[in-house]
Length: 45
Image (tube, rainbow, N blue to C red; front, side, top):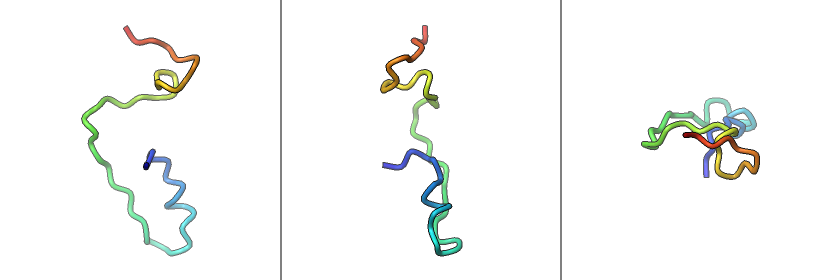
């Protein structure tokens, strides 16, 4: 599953082989402070 980190694009040895494209997931962007897997997350009200 792609998380949008771009590491695959930078690690690929073939120039211009991977092109990143924005995909609208229909949900708001979450950062680590609100991510469900963060045990110290800040609850949004």
